[in-house]
Image (cartoon, rainbow, N blue to C red; front, side, top):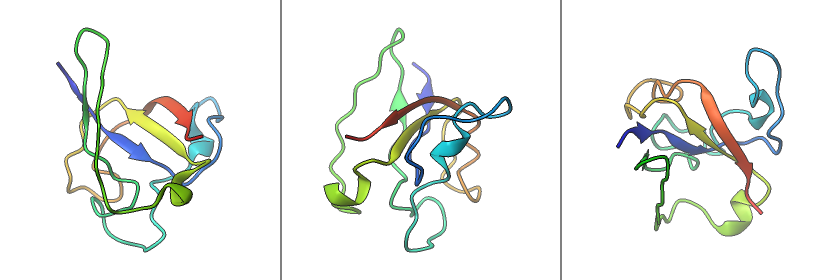
Length: 99
C-alpha cells in the first residue's frame, strides 16, 4: 500500500479555488504554535490497501471539543515528519469536516 499524510486542519470548510480545491481547510491545527510534527493536527499517516484505508488512533494531544467542526485532510504524499510547516505532504486530495 501507499502512505498518505493525514492531518486535522484549522479551517471549517472543504471549499477552495482552482489552484487548491480545499484551500479553505486552512493549515494544520496548531493553536500552540509548535513546529511540525508536533501540531495538534498532526496524525500518523494512513496506509492505502486496494483503494481503502482504516485507522484507529489514540492520541492525547487534544480533546474532542478542540476538533469538532475542523477539516480533516488526506494529502497525496507521505509526511516526512521534518519539513516545515507540513512535512512535505503534497497537495490535499480528500477533505471532510469532523462532526
